[in-house]
Image (tube, rainbow, N blue to C red; front, side):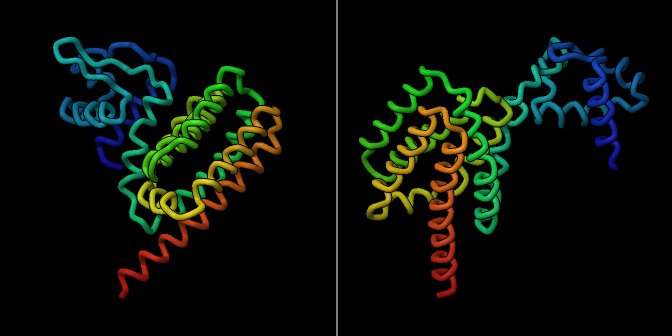
Length: 231
């Protein structure tokens, strides 16, 4: 373990133990370095890394503070990292989505409010009126994002949001194919009906069917791309 990693762990332990709370200002640099038995340069490196991870907020002329540590803040960089992954990992990312999203949809069925249901109905109508593949995909992401939000679980929302955009090119390709829009609308309609009935089992099944169909198209897209590269 590097010296910087060791300092990061020490600061993390201070937060986890409650000695430093979200929103608290860290002690002055020299005081904190002495307290942690580290050099000031090592402390600066650790603070820089934790700032990039949204754990600390360095305010010039004011000091360094612990952020709110809310899930949406700590996990905000996930989509950036996922986007950097190679095409060969697309299926793996989609498998993660297929594991998480049906469970999220089931949870949403138990917690969804009438207001959120109305938002989903509007989202589905906008999906029907979408002009072109890119708008259809945008509306599709919006629909799934609303379902995640209906769970009331901020951590789950942040994780799903981080993987929603992965494979966007493949999804646009799929959406441009004949008959896909009608099938997509039908699948989303089944999900919405299950949510309206507050049936978690049916909601999970509808989401699984929808994602399994999408995964099949994704595999075909990747196979096609591999074939084109070889030719």
